[in-house]
Length: 461
Image (cartoon, rainbow, N blue to C red; front, side):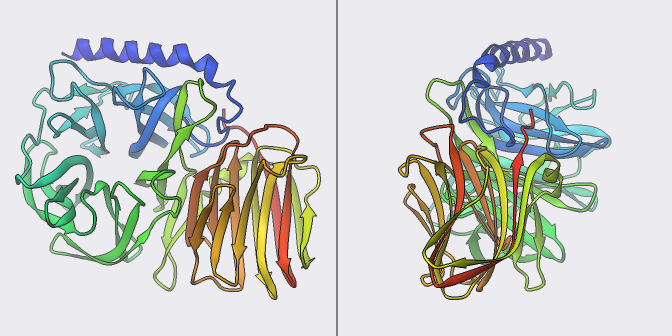
């Protein structure tokens, strides 16, 4: 069976390689976000730090730009920014429990052996695979599945294992839902990653199913993140007797499930917690790629107990063509064009103090076409952020008059960080790819820009 899987991996890699040449021609394909070499990708899977390098896996269809043939793509990085694509790690094997798909899961290191824990589907079962050559090739465990039967009959799903070490034991959360109860994360325990004992529901709550559950300590707090087939939610709560007791649930990213979904986390060697999420969608029709990942985000808890998300500082190595301003007073109902900015790959960070201004906005688009502009506008009177022409509106009730806007735009995707407490991810597809400009807009009496920094960003490829 190992030889069969090796041949299937070779076939899948060949299909991706054959499509790569067409991918680079798409002007809407992001340049500094992580994407698969070609074809479909979705959930980030099993990120792990191993022997001085970051390894990132992801759900991948090697054969086309649509969902299907679910496999595990694989890439490695020394700096969290530049990635080397490696051979596909896992792909479905006919005649086995994962014949219909190798779904999401985790990667851990046990007795110096990298081990992937994943879901085989139809029916949903939990499986493992090992690598004995530093994550280059993977061997599926002959005794798969390691969990073959759900613990109860009233479940709405049984997938996406998330595994962590605690003392002498391994623990696994499985994404699920309980009929007439709601979404659920189910807890298992093991001493060897092979023999698992079901304990109890770890946490239950809203929705019908919780996909891709994540649980981890952050500072002196504990966090549970779930993807409930809608906006990804998180809660800071208490961890007692191997159960999680959530406080209030909040959106991890306001970009909603049509843009941001199924994140995953990695504790690295510097005691940081790094998060990636899946950004949905491709580029121009006909180009063989679909899906990408967010920029790596560093999670932390601030002094008031709130979750913070900030772009990884390693991303600064992409900066070039910098512009910097300070103590700029914007007058009412005016547009301020930033000079000589034409790139579709940029980053802007603004520290802003709104005094009498009603609205402050960033406008990026075609110089001669007002219908081809992305407008990001903060309405201080109604405490909301509006993004047009996408007809998106987000309530931001607890912002102060002094605000940090940190925005990344990459050909057709944006990530917005507001005071590093609020994140909004989305897609915007400009009609034209040349002759763009970036401007600041003000509606009201006055505003003070304490500092403005802008950079064009280099490609990671």
